[in-house]
Length: 175
Image 1 (cartoon, one colour):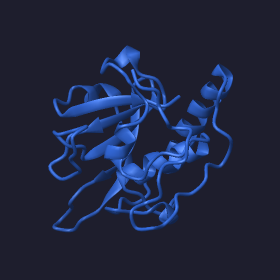
Image 2 (cartoon, rainbow, N blue to C red):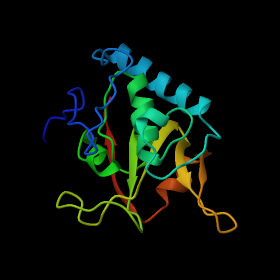
Image 3 (cartoon, rainbow, N blue to C red):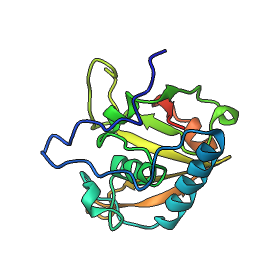
């Protein structure tokens, strides 16, 4: 299995805007990784209800998020710099089996989307990313069209509900 590069700084955003640095050094010991998981979950809870904006950049956080900028923002709090877009995030980390008992806080669940990004690594595409925040909880920035308007929010759902989906592409662990 290839080694993850998640502690290295990824290439800058294609727009030419450099990625932000992590807020702290990357976790290395088991205790630091457990602390990082707690930070990710706590910060995700603080962002509940924030608006979803498609293509939101890291500079807009924590005012607004799209799904991948939300994951990127949470991981910065844990000392890990993730790539900007979900398909590049999915290429990093270690693969985890899609079973409720196998998942840990901080694991990212990547979903095939109706719109999204496609490449040879994920020919089925990646359209969404969801963060595991507890034994039966996930939080994600979710798009929703309401009364003809585009929008959405950072929301909480049950992990069990997400794991029943047939469109999970891959689940990855970075801690």
